[in-house]
Each structure stands twice: as structure tokens, then as C-alpha cells.
Image: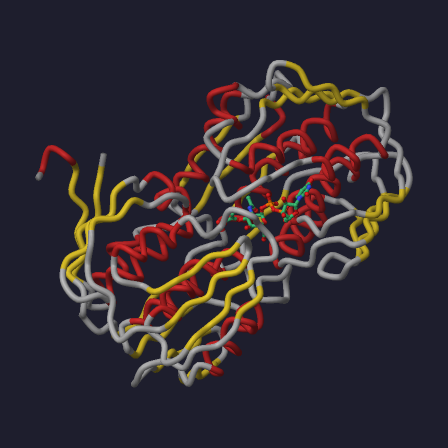
Length: 421
Ligand code: EPU
């Protein structure tokens, strides 16, 4: 088991390049099944979740080549099964996209329940409601979701909750359906637009992605394409917060600044300077940030994925902050770890009240989930003394070369495996 050892208190300065978005990549790679032809995916992040999806594609019989760390060529014509392996499926959340993709192409799918971060209840009832509206019969047995349809027919679906996963999954299943599918109360995250652009490049007819009403006119057949994944707004946001927590000056490169508007706005409210310039953004933090309140919301609101790293910055802010987590009921697991560093946080259900202190102090911590792990890294960087973070599996699922990029910015952080210590 690897650990990260961080010597805190070093100011982050310099430039960091942001990789492709995890949550786009993990949707677009399964979506390539619908092509039945060759797709070249560029700007892929080199993270564990991408490797996990690649393993599933190969298990299904696709011909997959990783040309370089950020480029993959997939020919899904050779796929010879619609059953996803149990062990592979539970390694990540996004394995649920194989239901929509396999159902769309073969009208059959068998996918074991997905894994992913333990951040509260994560039902997939809206995905199932969508597939059923398209005419699929869904059965759940022994932890496996089976979907089957004689044919898929376009339908009008109103989502009860705004769901990234359900919106994308229904788009996948509807591309090759007969007639038109409408998704109302659709999620608007940039990943949805990216996936729709990819599907349209394959020959699909999707309009309205990025708004709350998406129309998918079914087509007879799709083909191959070349696609470049959008930059990862959560990776960018994590570096923005890390820069501010270290009172640093960092240029975040290769981003789409609009995707980060809610984060930039909050950071400006905290007194941190954010200077946008084309496809980059500079974060300049001098003094102690001011406390602000945050409520997580679907895009374009403040993202739940950055709530945990942001709570670190608020732990050392001047004043008292209130965080309302409105997406997940279990996304405050990192708080107990931050308390070991001296943070003053009180959690009541979905609300955390943070009384800012001058400095956190380094401590041994356990990364309970992906963004909790990112939060702990941010905490370790800004703390006094040494922080040791264990359970890095989740961090590795979502961040490419995290410690290397931080070292390039002046952080003192190293990874050790149990044997090295
Ligand atoms: N929900 C339902 N029923 C459903 C689907 C969702 O009740 O059928 C609820 C969820 O319980 C949650 C809310 O709807 O309360 C939003 O969930 P959503 O479906 O949008 O989440 P997801 O698709 O499972 C993706 C990201 C998450 C990110 C959320 C919210 C991927 C693979 N995961 O999850 O990313 O937090 O959207 O933006 O795209 C992360 O990157 O760290 C991460 C957890």
C-alpha cells in the first residue's frame, strides 16, 4: 500500500497543465461501443479509472490500443459479449455506462452493480426509468443489472433528479433507438456536452446537450471518429484551491475557464485573485482567505466534487463558513480526518459549520474517497509539519501524476510504498 508523505508549508508557484476530464473519459470510452468501428480518443487522462474502463472494453472483445499515455484507439466492431465481468465492474462507478452503450448497440446488457466512491446513497433508479421508457425490460438478480429489448423506441423522459449518469446513459441507449427521445430536467455538466459531441461525431443526432432538455433523434447506424476530451474542471479546481491554500501564485493551463466560473467566483469572494487569460487562469493568494458560505448544486452551481478540497481552505479562513452539501448525504467523511489536523468543523446531516483557524497541523490521514483524498493533499500542503496519507487507490483513480505535478510547483511530497519505508 502506497502512502504520500507531505512536508507542509511550501508555497506553490509556477505552471500546471490540466489533463482531460475523468468524468468525460469514463463516459466516452464506453460510448465507443456504439460506433462498431474505430474511434481515436485524445487528451485522455492517465488515471486508474481509464485503465479500468479499458480492461472492460478488452474483456468485451474490443480491440484497444493505448498509443500513448493520452491517446487510445478502440475498434468496438469485434465486441463479442454483452456481459461485463463482476470484478471489473465494481472497480469504478462509471461501469454503469456499459448498460446504456451495450443496450443501445446489442439491445442486451448484463452489468454488475458499479463500485466507486462511498459518498452516500447512489441509486441508479433514474437510469433504469430511462431504459424502461425506451422499451427495455430490466431485471436485477445476484447483483447484476440485466437490460433487454426487442427494439428501443424513443420516448419522453423527465428525470426526477438532475443526474449526470442518468442523462448520459439515456443518451447512449437512445442514439440508435427508433424515433425521438427527449430528456427533460437533464444535467448540464460539461461532460454531457462532451459526450454528446462525441456521439454526434459518430453520426448521432443529439441537440440541446448543456441545457435541461436534450433531444436525441435515433439514427440507423453510427461510425468511427476522432475526439479530444475536454479539460478536467475538477482537477483544475483542485489545483486552484491548493494554490490558494499554500498562499501561492499558480498558472493553471489548458482549461476552459467558463467551466470553472462557480469556483472562480467563490475564490474571488474569499479575496483570492483570479486572472483569466484565454485557456488558462492564474490564482494569486496573499493573505488569509475570507470565510464564505457554499452550497453544492448541479452545474453550473458549485460542484460537490470540490466541496471537500474547498472545506480545507475554509478551515484556515478568517471567520465562520457554512457548507451545505445538497447532492450527496455522505460527503463529509473527510471531516474527521481534518479534525486530526486541528480543524474546527461541526457536521449536522448535510451541513458543516467551519470555524476558521490560523493553521492546520500535519497528521497521519486516510483518504476515504477520491475528492476526500484530494482535500487531504491540499490540507497537508498548507499544514505545519508532516502529513502522511494512506489508502491512495481512490486518488489514483482520478488524478494523473498528482504528486509529480505538485513537486513541479514547489511542494515537498513523495510517494512511498510499504517496502520503501
Ligand atoms: N441520483 C438518484 N437516482 C439516480 C441517479 C442519481 O437519486 O438514478 C441522485 C444521486 O444519489 C445524487 C444525485 O442524484 O444525489 C446526483 O447524482 P449523479 O447521477 O449526477 O451522480 P453520478 O452520475 O453517479 C457523477 C460523477 C461524480 C459527481 C456527480 C455529481 C461520474 C463517473 N461521476 O456521478 O463524480 O460527484 O456526477 O456531479 O461522472 C468524482 O469525480 O469524484 C465523482 C464522484
